[in-house]
Amino acid sequence: MHNYFDTIPEWSDDKRMNFYMQDFKSNRQVNPEDWDQKMNFWKNVFQTFVEKDKKILLTVKDIKSDIFLRLSSNNQKKLPLGWQTVVQHLILSLDVVEAEKFVNYVETKDEQGFIGWMANLFITKPASWVWSKMTSSSSHNSDVNYQQNPSKIPLPEDKKLVVVNTVKTMANEWKEEVLSSHVQFLDLFKTPTEIKQYFPSIPTEEIHYVLLYLQQKKVATILETKSGTGVRFFESQKPESYDASTDMSIIQLKETVQVLENQINEMQNAVDTCMEKAREHVKKDQKTNSKFELRRKKMLEEALVKRGQMAENSTKLLNNIQDVKSEMDVLDALQAGAKTLQSYTSKLQKMNPEETINSIAEIVADYSEISELITEGMPLALQMKQDDKSIDEELMELQNEIAEELPVEEKSNKNPPSATSPALTIQTKVKKVEKQKKLAVS
Image (cartoon, rainbow, N blue to C red; front, side, top):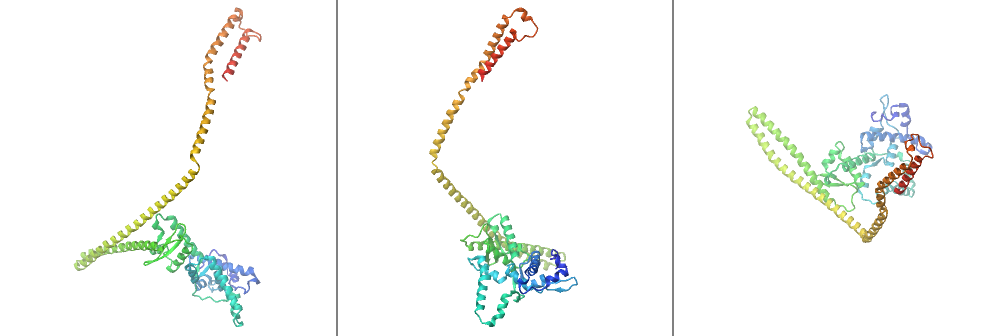
């Protein structure tokens, strides 16, 4: 017991627990903080237990003896005086739901849904009950007192309560695993054998509440077959127009294959056992016993062949169902694609494609015209580059002419030219010619 509540520091402290073991005040308004502190503590104790133990179904006696009964430091078992009040409020807060009401809510196809069911359970019915008490004789005053103080209403210890949070957690985890891991259509169908394999340690009665919750959320539907209860999951939600008969047949067929496979394994083991026994009898020279085991082995082998043929035929039928469903999905996708293509084609026709193409042609023609104007200056630039050679030759001739006009002594003078020398004048003229050449190129 202490292992469950190691995370609750008060549980191992006798002095602190003395406060929580006391009864609740008959009127919460006298000291609401004190009242709420006790209630929240015991609700926390309850949630800690059911979360660690994965409890789906509890009786009032289970809550009393397995959760609220505390072993003190001197090994004395004590029960909190207000445990009935805590159970009542667990019911009112929907931490637990009475089993018969949970089943009635889910199995009754009421369009008002969960909120409507809540309103009916906790508003409509109590209101009508109070009105009947107000209009009845004064001899029922004791009942009115119970209504005003629900903690005094005794709860039968055999009353079954469904732990809602555990049901939700298990249902959602299973749903997520099925939808995330399924490869083909048939993986969405869970047979009675597969359900029991997924919940190996949970009683069938408790598993049923998980199935009811999944069905209420419309992510799965319960299918009752000859071989037991199966489940069909939906990738989104259960469709409005749903025919369960086809899915029931698939559940039945899958279960048949699984049963046959189990029988084949068991019969094969029996054949091997018969052969081993026959060998042992031969070693002991017990011919009669050996023949008996061999005859039994032969009978089992004949039955094994029949079971194998039945399993093979059933498996082929399941594969055919899967193939047809895959082809239906492909056809649905093609039809959807055809509708989409038709819709886009209709929109394309309304966009007047001929006018658009003509407009594009005009724009392209305008662009070509502008491009030609831009590129017309290119031959002129090329011609100017070709004229560079002739300009250079003309420059050289001009330099030679000026050099010949200079006196001989000036030609041989090694001193640098002055600012007014003819050589400087020649350089200035050369620079002017080069500048003109650059301007012509640009």
